[in-house]
Image 1 (cartoon, rainbow, N blue to C red):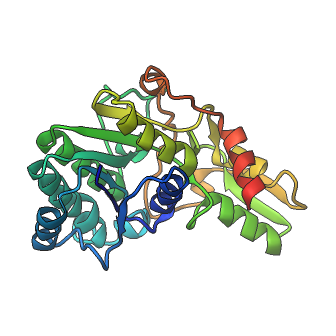
Image 2 (image 1 turned 60 degrees about the horizontal axis):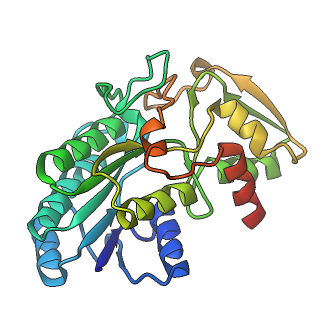
Length: 279
């Protein structure tokens, strides 16, 4: 099976590469220098020459606040919307299976209960809007695909909230973190393992939502990260910590569909403990 990973050197792509290495599974990993997904001609040429059978599409623009600066005209749109459509069209033409990673930011965060795959998206920031455009391209064009919505991603590789908190704790004795945004943290290892599990076990194609079990606020997440550090963490409201991009207040996603596949999801606290033991 010929496997292609786009965005292979980002946070998730790196985790997936190391997982495949552990299992002695061959793959080709590309970054923007090797495969510019925003260039349709380059994508078409690459797929025609290499004809991958499985495409793990990890390439994405994830700078949520920067995406707000020029709505609809930034690299965010070029990568997440145009780039994804280029990959999708090429993947379908060569008959590949595509795995696309999306986000809880496709929701507005106003629902009291958990979001299901059947809930209507209503993104309130540019990042969520462009990732939804990517979802729509996959659903419109692909015959064999998995869309995996995830949230609050953390892991050993790349920049993420865990490293931000640990680094701040080295230079501060007091931190403030918002406590009125509720979601599910997701370990990159959990995400990468399901991406592989879905393909290897012929899981039904379609849209899935995946995070680690349990939910929390960013304040609760930070407190757990820093519980063994000599630093005080205090809760603040979103209004006290303004950001350019809108953040959903409650974006907890229902994991029942993933559970039905037989994939075992560990809790976010256990995932965090596993990660910290490797740092």
